[in-house]
Image 1: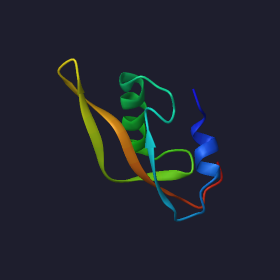
Image 2: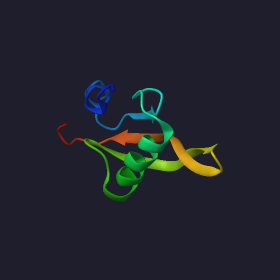
Image 3: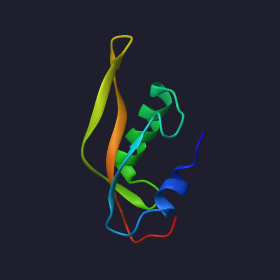
Image 4: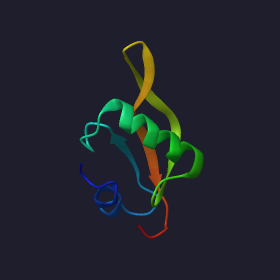
Length: 75
């Protein structure tokens, strides 16, 4: 699994970027759980912006990617 911290550190504060299950080499179910936490509490150095993109896996709608905005917080 690629570290989300590595992606976030490359971004300048205020930058908007996409994080996906594929980028982090995660299964959709794993990424969905993680993205739900980010929606509720924010992520390490970013906040979710907009509506997450979802896909259907075995009849369930799972988050497959989110658009986030880098905060000035350290990662």
